[in-house]
Amino acid sequence: MNDLIKKQLQDAQVSMDKAILHCESELTKIRAGKASAGMLDGIVVDYYGSATALSQVASINTPDARTLIVQPWEKNMLVPIERAIMEANIGINPQNDGVVIRLVVPPLTEERRKDLVKKVKEEAERGRITVRNIRKDANEKIKKLKGESVSDDEIKTGETEVQKITDAYIIKVDKHAELKEKDIMTV
Image 1: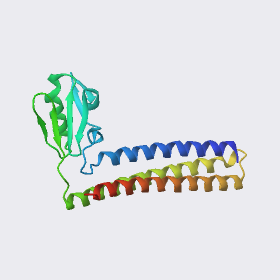
Image 2: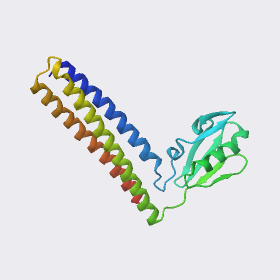
Image 3: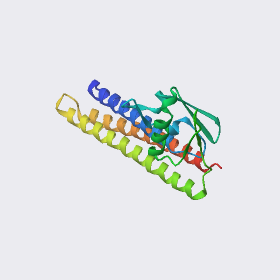
């Protein structure tokens, strides 16, 4: 196979790896009724005027399956952390006891579980669309190589390889979504 085509395949694979990682991180943010520190990823706290990730101003622990404890490094950060959690709208009310912030994850109702499964399906579809867009871009780049001493047969082979890679990554997205759905539906 032509080196130019190999380079396009490698680039496509790297991009698809990034798409899978993004999809995984988005799925992690969908809570499954169990407390996990990942639920607070993406929450930004006002730390002396600069937006800082919650995990960089406090430790986050899960003493049991339904509780998260956020312990700030500095006591004066309790209120800004509490405010940031409330503004993040993750569906949990923080309880500030003056030392730590407790987040009690309520058990999920059947209706809420179905809503979360819908979110998982939407996120998985976004992941599949991203992978397909990467495939489209890779195929376009491979077709543009036609003028650069690349034969039609090599272009067809390159496109076939891109499709094989795409299929493998779509299966990965589906597996992640399936695991998350199972996690949500487990009572």
